[in-house]
Image (cartoon, rainbow over all chains, first blue to last red; front, side, top):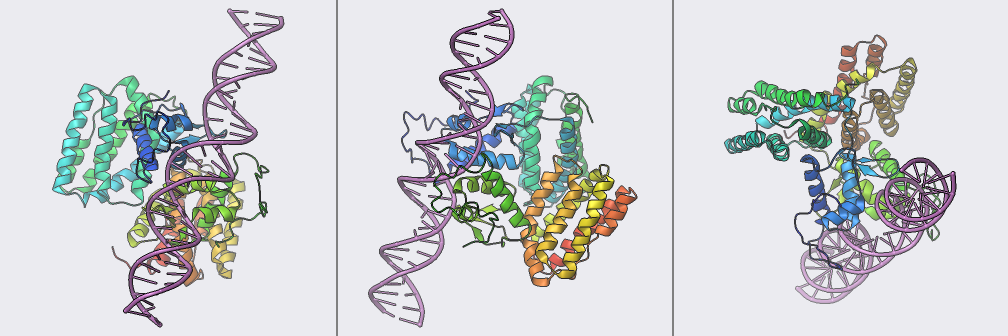
Length: 236
Length: 236
DNA sequence: TTCGATAATTTGTGATCACAAAATTTGCAA
DNA sequence: TTGCAAATTTTGTGATCACAAATTATCGAA
């Protein structure tokens, strides 16, 4: 029995002989979206192995689309295919953690900088609204909501860049560290977290690219540097 | 009829009923490797659509492993799954090209810098040997050999970094621009190319990280900036 | 000859099957 | 109770099938 990834009952199946009900070519997209979302809000525990048929049953589809999605996610290093074929959520190591942080600091401020030129007043308003909900999730101490909203904030911003190259890379990075961060927040809570979103929003308002990059960099460093460190035996 | 990706005759098939000859779990790896190599040396033309069964037949396997590999490569943006399900090698656009260049300049010098600390005399010697063959391919005007050897040079260096994060991202970038570069070299030839590998090797020898980063950055800028530009209607 | 509709083919998608390797459980002996 | 070997189950892999959508080929009318 795995976590409840399937939201719609849809296929309670009975015997489900050829349920051609769903549209063509959507099963894979649905599975992909479900697993990605699950990874991002930390429903998968690092080190825990994930089974093909298990996911398939949870999502009410045949193993076929799941197989393809797993390959997809493995290519993005969000899942790890072990030599014996077993699939699991990668465990975090100190060196991995350091390099993810380092790479995020290279890419994300740059991406935010590109995005800024494209930000509309409407988008800025949306970002403010999301940030308010982030604060809310922090005071309530709801890790899943925080992860979801923090992700939403960053990518609402990054998506504005219309980036075709850096954005997918950054998405891959988030898939790689999100499951680990969830375990950390589960242990130490989210109360100590202070985001730099306010500084970022201020920088956007005054159209200061440098300030925005600094704010994003600071947000990343705070989020990962302070919280994550104490949860890894520092071996590097 | 597609290009000859399969090297071993292995499955001339006759009727090939259940050829359990190959070891278990190698079909996918073989397909993955074959298609990746094909992309890197430019055997696939951007815009040309690639078919599941076509690749499967070329490689002498069932469509199954090919499906998984295609998903993998699509996740790395090396292939593009169009809305109608058709798969093709992505075409290059000016904005894509610019962003790939920009991202390469962010990541690859950094990666080379990390790698330098790990370089052994043995590896340095290997790099020199590869570079000689690169020169050879340039004077001979052999684009495929050049692409293969240039790739080999860069990744022999980058692999030394033992990077788990940046290296896969950079690999994804190379898969994205390699097919396009091949078409360029096919048109304008490789004679005008001058690589900065010598500078890089010198920097490694004197253990100068800054110089190495500069050399790599210059190599990237030369290779893409000068050659690629004139082959794209600059729309940005 | 040219254009457009219809027929034939190709193609991706999802499901199912067979199989072997691996993991898990079971059960017996010390 | 504990340890280990046999048996059972689970799991990934590759192949094949059925089906619909899309592409391509075919052929007749203007």
